[in-house]
Length: 118
Image 1 (cartoon, one colour):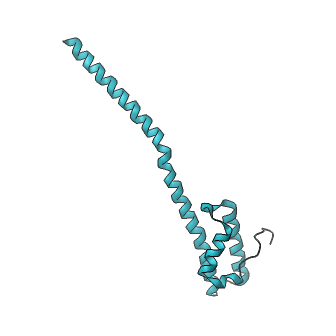
Image 2: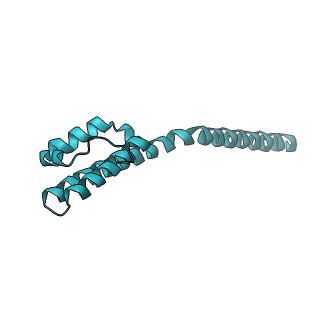
Image 3: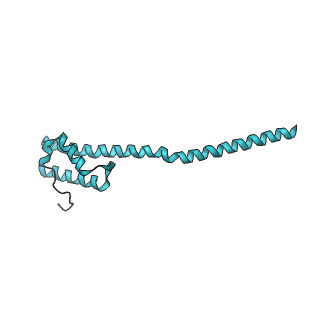
């Protein structure tokens, strides 16, 4: 009878050990899929922030708080940043269209080229 008690304890220990290994393995394999939505959230945040800065620049120009050359320079820098970092897969043309649809008066200061030397 003593042998059955030890055998039962040994089986129980092995079962717990096996379950621990399976649980740890499943957690390790599940971690990357849990981290992916955080990246999507970051992209969404950056995309909104970039579009927000463009909208703010156009609004400040429309209110007269920015001179045309200041607004043009700010837009050029923002568009270079968006193009260089491909924030949230934003396309430069899509960003421009969204900003000008919101504030058509901003077209007066929208830079033609986005070269850093300008």
